[in-house]
Length: 123
Image (tube, rainbow, N blue to C red; front, side):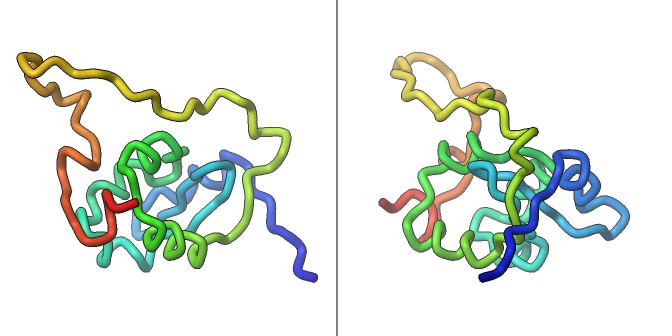
């Protein structure tokens, strides 16, 4: 049995892609090294790099990633967030009914607004 590697938020933050560093993300309390996946992300590396070194849970779920995308993510898992740092402050997205007359704002732009690909948006 292999021991699960635990990381602190500070350790993840040091992998923010700057100065040629690796890109790590936190999604659902798991830590992923997505460095090698950046060039292959269907929506472009910029969407992933925006969350480099941070918790990307909400953004990942809001994008409606497919089961194939979730399988790909599992292969990039390098560990988990340390239990002392897991707080329950990450909320799952709630669906908001948007008026047809409401113009999209930059804040409301998410993965679904920006990309449409073969892996994202399928259930």
